[in-house]
Length: 618
Image 1 (cartoon, rainbow, N blue to C red):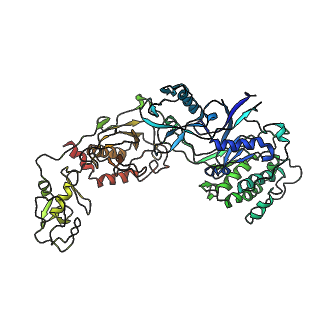
Image 2: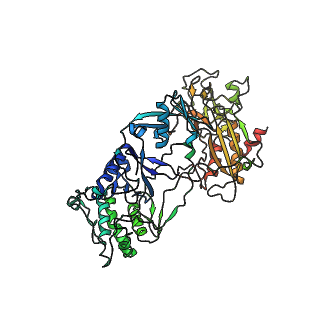
Image 3: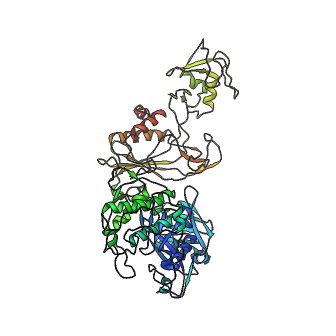
């Protein structure tokens, strides 16, 4: 028994072992079903209160939640908090993600923050509850004690979580009370998800004779959706549970220290979960156990058609033989039925994002053979003083006395006519024409000088047609630091070698004359950025060329982010990096058999090749 008065918060367990709270509206919905007792069927369809949770069903007898489109299982719990705490006042504390959205803190963290806020403390250190963060109320910011990185936090008001009074049951007991258990049955809901839940319950309780459906549901049922296998025969005992189910697979970690997700194998064997005892104290598995594998699959097919017709989203889930994809609702329901019957089930689970390697001690970090030092800072290379644009371009051009009758692709005027460029006046005649010595493309010299003046003015020139680079191209990367070393872990697809880890660090600052908005501040999101290469011969070659690109300020630039839309921020500059260590969910991880060749081609497009390393030494 618990205290006489408490706030009820329903929570689910994520893969990091943290209990994540449902919203107040969802908790009210679940609590209403709990208080209705067995007449509500013992299952909660979350899509009825929040459309984003449409794939999820909670089974109150097993205190688990099942995701219908993937078959993923997670436990849930009914937790109690002081009515004077944050959930009892409708207060929600949230932190800002990198994409600008807001994520609520775990309930105990939010309560701790709210308590300090009410006491008018200037700040609260969360170390005592296991998080390396400080919340500064004066700036409404979260500060990482290790990296000093700051995020915004906010306090908002929502619904008050449901309140319970009097003698409270334990967290996982259901029905809520004997009085409720004896209540008369209420008309069942006729939505497709409830029809599915109720029909599965009826099918297994009646030995598989047929689903229990409300009249309205029968009229709207798609053809062929209710055909079930024949009865399993006499002697079958009823099952008092639908099987075990779990909670949402989409997790939003509330702290950065829980972002490292452990890798999960593609196929996971699901054993036979222990069914909770029913009212009569019997386990109630015999009805399904008497069905053979074929009849179980037929039963699952019939029940899953309701979900398929209702538009539940599909994701790749392999069938029981692992030979081809099937509808995930079918695979998930089949898995529950077969698992309840004690038969082996093999379903795939959604892969997990693995950004970082396992922790590495300082003694395990080694320098890279053949590569000097372990870090370097940005150096800004300028064109030699005294060189005018005309003098720089002169060494790359050959004058053309009789230009062909075709367009200059810079000004789009005929080469036989004067340049159509109307900008600053270079000190050359507009009718002069030149040919680039290596690629042979022809332009007005006037146009080439104007193009050079509008660029980085670093002594290099890039053909606007074929992108051939003349001289040494440099970029506009802001000041920062590049670190590189070996760690004793292997990347997926490269099991025979260690890993080169690159760490880029660029602080925010003020834009210089070479940047889009000189004198304006720029942001630097997501730093330090960790990137990974295999410690193979080709991987070391890529690293050496990336060092050249770093020295030439070509790895990053200042511009507009393609992911967030933020302007005046540090962005990648056309040289792709792998930022996932143990997965490839975003396309920025391993295995990727073509990555090293692709990045070598991208570096070559920036004028960086094996010859470049020799040039840097010179």
